[in-house]
Image 1 (tube, rainbow, N blue to C red):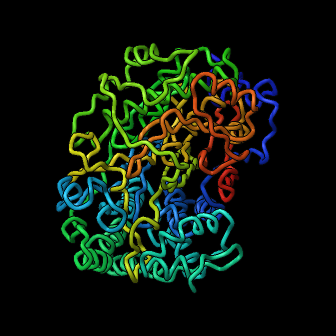
Image 2: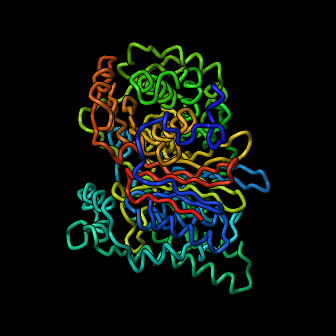
Image 3: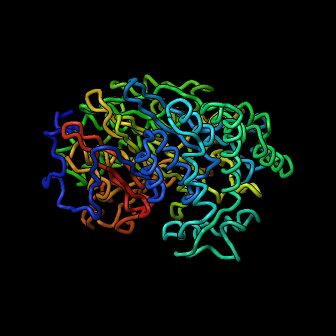
Length: 589
């Protein structure tokens, strides 16, 4: 790669007017001490308060994540998933916490084939063990400095006292109103008096506040009996996985045809593992393992490393075509190979090797688009149902990026929707419906199986430059997540843009692959362009064989990237937050 591909280097074209004539709508938030960017301003504010009070990046990230489970509870559930990557500067320790639950012991592909036409249906049957509480507490226990009560107090406040309904959440609840109307407990919260909340309403979630407060109270009781911070955190964890909350959740499953049991909950543990990574110029980009779609970002970078992207020109026809075709190739590999590596064999070394990237790169034709998904690396084409309607899959997830005064960093993608499963009455919790990202086909690498993790779309990333932590980054958006993050990384590293401009530049998204969410429909050849692309660009891409669909100028389906960049040459932290999901905001000091 050309040497100018760097993030945060003094000699890179950061903010160069040559990179783009576009001017960002929001400023870059710059800081010298600590900074946070997240999917909602109240979450960012909570994390910022923790940092100001002396907490570290992990404390702040957990506080923000719990707040997102309240103020963004349509797309982030307190009982959902929370994959994260953590960097501890003084130890030089980089680790991922999976934060995704595995399938209950009572599940089987045969159940879904026999009773549900080979699909993983909406409702209780797609529940996997809720992992987010365990992930939050594991992060605090190993790497944090505060108690669960200290970091969860913000979330309890916003659940108990309410927050002002904002436009993005109001819109999303309106879109999912019919889904939430199916179940009384969902209707009670999200359709009060039979209608969706409107902008400006005070939105209260009393049951959710009570559930969080129960965990805080159990922690306080343990510490009051002479326990330390660690034993208090364990008590908070036990309150969820062994206490009253577990009994309420599992009793409801037993009475309503669900599969989750007390044994499933009591034996659950999150998994810590090294990240996987690849080099791109002078950057090392890290993701979670092949139980997530994170390595697809790395594969795309490997393929694109063989092109002179600068010469192709930012967001010009040739550039868009090459990036999209690379994404198609990695999505084909994702379908053929990705799954829980603790259960199946994943050829990780091959998939991330330069030789393999070169072989895949040879399949990109500059004058013609693949009309559908290209063959995977094993030359087996994956089949998927095609769809003609607009993209309708869930677009849950948010993101949190934090860097503290010590140089510690955390990148988190908390997630899980409330509208495709049942909120357990009296708890305010919708235990993780991430089973939607498994297949009922035992031949698929991400098939349903007891003790197996679904192939998760949420995928936090962490970027290093010349061995030093440079940037936590991530995005919501289902299968558009890695596409959004990839484009932002390229905007910064290849074209020298500042973080906010890089985020706000027009974006493109391919849908040529099977959707990660059940029923896994594909849209062969579909390429969506935000409306700021010219008609000439759209027409030229159509001539190459892309089935172009024009979106509005800015659309939330194109992702919601949040990041904090540590520019070590200047000693400055720079944050960006995506206005496509307008509640996302960054703060720094």
